[in-house]
Image 1 (cartoon, rainbow, N blue to C red):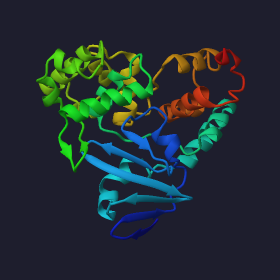
Image 2 (cartoon, rainbow, N blue to C red; image 1 turned 180 degrees about the vertical axis):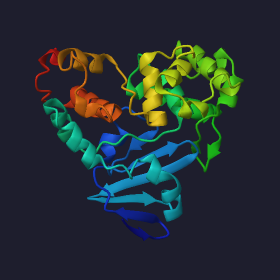
Image 3 (tube, one colour; image 1 turned 90 degrees about the horizontal axis):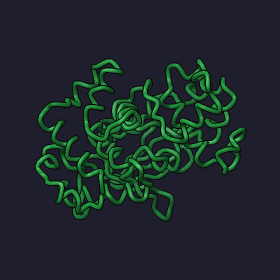
Image 4 (cartoon, helix red, strand yellow; image 1 turned 120 degrees about the vertical axis):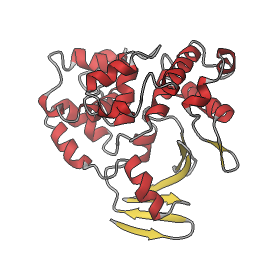
Length: 283
């Protein structure tokens, strides 16, 4: 991998199997915005970033090589061989179509706390509203970053709020779930660091002790926040996939990368104009 660093930007190449639209606008994260020039600007925890792609060159603006190596390289999961994963998943015909449809999608390695609150907010919601609620949450309760950005608020900060204060975010019934999550994490009843070492089922059970965290949200936290490949979040789209395509269970090629397979299938089924063999979804 080669680096070209100036005082304004860092260029890294070659970076393959990484498409910004497919990765940053697929519903796994909510603090990135696509700009008119097809670049993206986003905030991750307490870091702001502006990035673009030019062929196989990834361009990070205002980021040093040390910052890239210390954080962004891992966050974007750039050390994982997605070409090999896609070859494995493509042993199944339907997954082959899904991988070919969004070949540049990667699973981000996000902060578990931010993922937990984001997917509590995501329940029965659309992406536009989710982004709006999270933006207001950070603007009102997050520490300032630079002139106009705000970090994601810490659990201790949210734990001290009232339902009325959280209600100002226009989060509806989710306010009580946000508060319960913050209080349980802040007082150690749910130890997010400890969850990393727990077996999958135990970690999931811990997360589901939080009000409003069911099977799907817990799996989202484990996949996007802990990179647990056993996690396979099941919303209405994925449940139909399993019912109509895999009634006997996922194929063996998914065994070690079920979470990544879910991402390809989810994006394909929701947005592909073809969706071969899935006519019932077009109704």
